[in-house]
Length: 323
Ligand code: C5P
Image 1 (cartoon, rainbow, N blue to C red):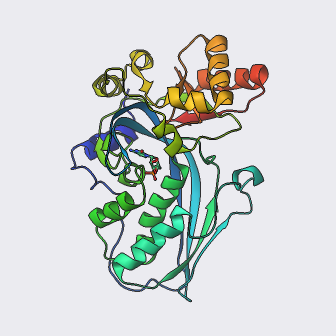
Image 2: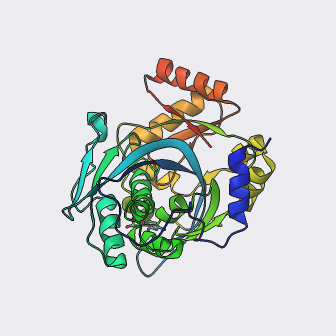
């Protein structure tokens, strides 16, 4: 079965990497006073992640398959006439999701906005209101997605004559996951340090039951814990399963090289993965550097049932991820 969004991904697949951005109107003139827009910042899920080598710049060469999910933060961008950039949480953002998310220039949203202004040679301002739902340090790229949306949204709000390629260059300078989220692809193989995006076709809707332990994982520390002794895998089998809609086989070839080092650093996550395996008798995977872990599910109903079981048997509230 193929839905509307998969044909979008397939048409994106025909485009060169890094260039597939959602279209916006660019006329280069000052926006009308009081302009505002709200856009989603979708979470990504890694269904495959192999670490190929350590690079001299401290990063790692990757072969990873990322999926764009429906689970998202929302970012509202409002024009400001005084040239300032101000970031705040929406009133509805839960208290526990605010911890560990700075609102100053350490936040990727403000760094993205500043980099865009520099590149465009403008000093326009904006109020940025973040409605957070994606937990930080969860391997779902919430912060990167916020920044990717800020780049796309502010270009539109400020009517900037900035190409998709330039947005992708800025994105790559800010982190490794932004380019996939900026591309708008539903599924992609991401290589280099993650910023080179090759959209791939994906059949049918996919459902995951995801859950996170209390403690998050620091990405840098998890990467430093990788051991390179075993032979490397590649993403081709996972890509074929996505293209064929063979979700059963997919469960047999999902893989994440970062799972072992993450488990040894986060005992709570390791225990959660073991408990899930015991209860569901199915493989349990980790997204990115964790600490979100997930099960593949055959349908939305099956995923909701898994989530209910997690709540009853583990007293943990997970969430549905849909691709
Ligand atoms: O790119 P990003 O800022 O999200 O990466 C966070 C950290 O994760 C990096 O500072 C680096 O330590 C590690 N990382 C890596 N190799 C990658 C991506 C991230 O070592 N390909």
